[in-house]
Image (cartoon, rainbow, N blue to C red; front, side, top):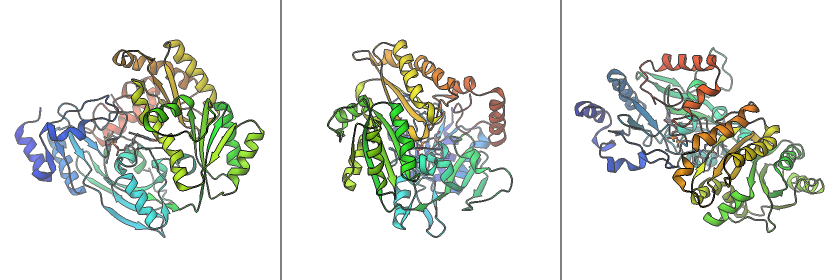
Length: 462
Ligand SMILES: Cc1cc2nc3c(=O)[nH]c(=O)nc-3n(C[C@H](O)[C@H](O)[C@H](O)COP(=O)(O)OP(=O)(O)OC[C@H]3O[C@@H](n4cnc5c(N)ncnc54)[C@H](O)[C@@H]3O)c2cc1C
């Protein structure tokens, strides 16, 4: 319980206008995208600068106040949602693009800049910031770094960690570390920035970042293909890499059930007329003639039964709309139990087969909707409730279903959280899958950076 006098001291840091104490005005900050958590908090603070974040953490450290950082509030594991007496620190006013350096291929931004705005700022100087997620219109840079977000272009450009050159962080006691460098090489001891990236706000609050930019591809070739099986899709991936001279920038696997959900609920039209069990959406950059040749060979080899190549930017966007509608459209089919998992790329087809069989054995009628980033071995193995089943009764099986799927992941030395992180959702699972020495090193780092445990308690480590 935080007393009124302490709340006032926090409010004084950001000013009355930028502090919310009325629960009615906090709704947008407390509502979680999947409705799995309903947040509560005595106070939302909206600092405008690193100095204000520092003052907040200094006060929190001195008074043992729990702090939850939040950027765009699109996280899918409950990390950014405060509970009980946790104070929410929102980065949503720290939205300055500090500098864009086209010659250096880098951009420096405050942590509250929306991902889409970073992409646009890069585009303005004929550069590309390649991180791309369905949530890019809301997710902010601090959140993408704190979750080490992946998304659609990891295959070619890596995940958020690979795209970050430097960060500025406010430590749990309020001290500021300015690590905003744009160096490509720096072997001067431990690579501290990488500890904060993917730490989900448990080690410090990221307040700014310097990110890598790339030359903008001159052209994209985008194809929506019908494939007979995940195994054929995997062979198509390898063919595409060779035929394009390794210019495959996206390779997404989509199941018929998911494409059907997207068409039914979100008007996302399947561009192919003849139905197929599986589809692939793939994109090559700067390899204009390679797509047609690749698909021709794939048809000859029976890896593809039909395909459409986008003939305009509008058609390309329409193809992507199908892919990007998959997550949201599942909401309309009742309860959906989610698994964001990865296995070695070559094992994806056998994993899908084994996990689907295991789930169907566990619950008759459960509808597997497995889709995602085949090129990275990262599948969103989501399971919609059996038709007609009560939603709450279905969702009560969340952890039991997770155990069924995770067993198949772990058999293949995979990860139970490929890109969404651990948050609250998977914190209890971590001890089951990490070795004691890994847990010991992680706990040691937490104690070093946040000895009082005020930052995001109960997330990642329990
Ligand atoms: C429709 C949809 C599609 C998605 N697709 C993808 C996808 O393809 N790939 C993918 O990786 N993710 C995906 N996500 C998940 C989510 O968008 C990402 O995890 C994103 O990176 C979160 O950014 P955010 O700004 O919303 O962070 P938030 O949700 O605000 O926070 C996420 C976590 O980071 C912490 N945090 C936030 N800001 C800071 C900061 N400045 N310093 C320290 N800690 C901080 C929070 O406490 C929390 O633990 C998707 C989500 C949705 C809703």
